Length: 474
Ligand code: AMP
Image 1 (cartoon, rainbow, N blue to C red):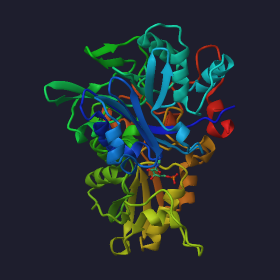
Image 2: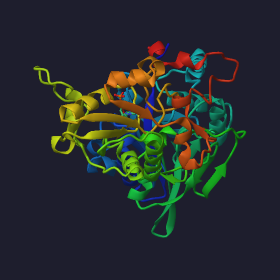
Image 3: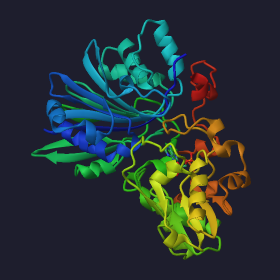
Image 4: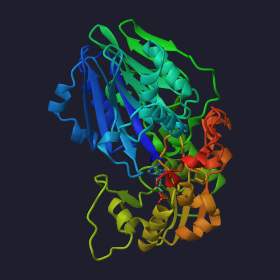
């Protein structure tokens, strides 16, 4: 049994720009929040694909001499983050493979729910895997397809994949973007003018387009495959239409607030969630304070709606790396203190509403409540701008396994006791959709509701989703 990866990722591709790799680098820079473990770019000059993949952050990896080597007018890139212990260069993307029709590179955001089944089948018929990533399954399906054209192979491969994929492929003369029929993960299309020619960009989020001054055109639609080639742009919808299941958690936490997601500005959505939270769960208090950065827009909305002043009682250090040396002499709540500092001058003697976007394990909230009290807060009321996170994500958000999610087995009152807040309230499920006038269709909210839109692959296999839970795969 192989280790199942749970990955958060960004994809970015540019077609028809003399400095394609440089544009992709800038896009990946803007999308760093979606993955901080490894990054890679593959470019095409029409004759060869050139690849650079490395562990680390975008700005540290792509120095001038690296970008110079990545020549050509088209390029795709990828940022990756996984916490399941598979932190290894062999899993860094884009992957490049040679198949009968030449080299092809692939970048993938999302998780397939039937990757294990497909992998077993492919291995049984002789495929040799080099990584533990779902993405390699797609490559092997393409390579072993009996179809004669590349598009035929891609369509056949994707018709067997179940779950979430926002994909970019690069060949010597084409870039191809594909999004799964349910549209779990975002993928947007933009264009830019480069001299007299029109070029295209495809990225996980619109903030990547803004940085390179590309114009947003539209989303790559669920189930759509777009080819960018010598003849321009061609769109194909080869799969039967499926109900859409766009990730609501991108709005709550994951996407950058300056992105436009599924047609709406993320910052304004988060503010609206905060307003709704205040309408549902108001409390007598002196001030509202966000858990920065993710809680800031919702806290602004909460403060506006409640009429309470917004103050930054917690200040974040933006330069915290992923590792730091802990002093041997114990400092209480060291991990959170490195990142956040509570301001006594703001908090002392105050009844504080503290707003965050979600509680996962509960350990951060617990430490934050303690910090606020230590800094003199008289009351601490925790408000969360989403419903309780009760289930893991199988479609590309890195939530821990069910047993580690505090809300999977504890009531709100039990969580309140654990984090030691004076009160704790979450946004209601209906309230989460308030900004859409209550329309809930078209979204995946499985992490809050337990309604998983794809349960198991429909090819006769009865592996239920829980078999793909990371703990049971390790
Ligand atoms: P916890 O201590 O596990 O309850 O962590 C809660 C914090 O993690 C909140 O401040 C969230 O903004 C943040 N968070 C929520 N989901 C994720 C995620 N998928 N990756 C990283 N951080 C997250």
